[in-house]
Image (cartoon, rainbow, N blue to C red):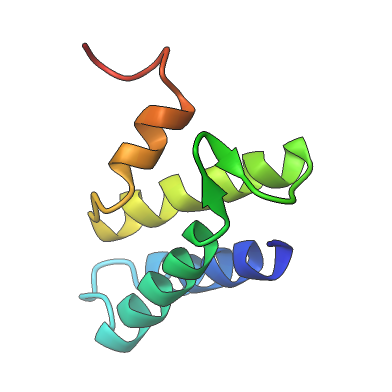
Length: 88
């Protein structure tokens, strides 16, 4: 889990460092792949085989990925994890 979190974070750093330039499609693909790998550990309302701080870091990496790329792929997971914060 930690390696996937670091992978997502590293790719997002590269995406955000581009300032006003359009994101590199290779970096977007790498970020999507890393986020998908991280989500394979997601089960129900948390990440399997993870301590609470690892789950928190994984959740933050997922949110950062969605913010940086505009993806809404994991909104359902976030709503299940954070039910008190989801609308409606």
